[in-house]
Image (cartoon, rainbow, N blue to C red; front, side, top):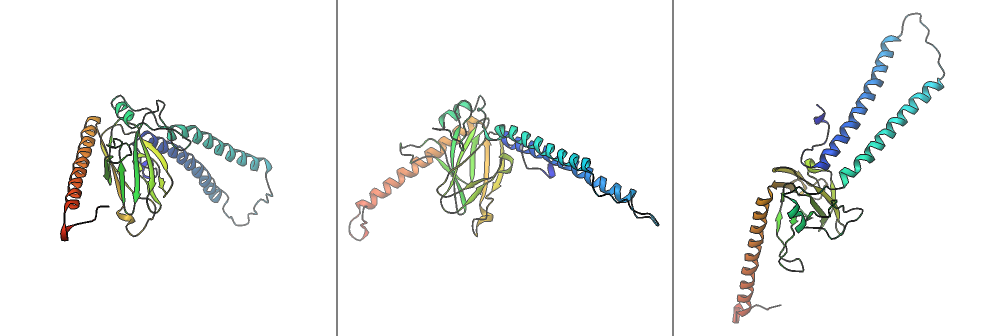
Length: 272
């Protein structure tokens, strides 16, 4: 029943912690709502208007007013303490599992900050998330060149290994977008010239769907995203295939450029 009113979860520990915190707050709110509305209904029935009856003239009850003010303050304080206690498990990524630890090491982050969190062992599979109207691009570690060129990438579907802590570096090339895969955690803005960071760790293979959560233009509704979690060995094979395809495309482009440069006469092109 509560699942209908609470955030989606089940794909990553941080999403589960958000869901648990939301449920605790919701239950507390429901209990207070039932008590208050129940008291009102009781008063309506018990003290309804009767012929000839004169209502009691009560101008105030200091003890009662102090009581409900203190109770509300204590409830608010308890929820605040609980929220701050849970924030660590929501913000701070855990280490990868045994199978994913090797892959996390290949994409280790260079530094941590207040915004970019690292697992305790400092290793995470770092993936760049670039938003543009109206598609998501994902750039993986493993560039062929030292300057980052030739890095494997994909569009719309982000492929990740299971049991691996995946750190996302989110930015935009044009307008503000919002990265949101409900079952994997909260929303994060993709802002031009600025980087936002989040993480997830998916325990078992599966597909998780989401889309841009900020109106970003006429094609906003088409800007969907999918996260596909596969076993580490399958991820290795997929990433190797992506690298090979990029290398083959670059080699073909190099050949075509050389052919164009060698042309003479009417077919000659200027070589920049």
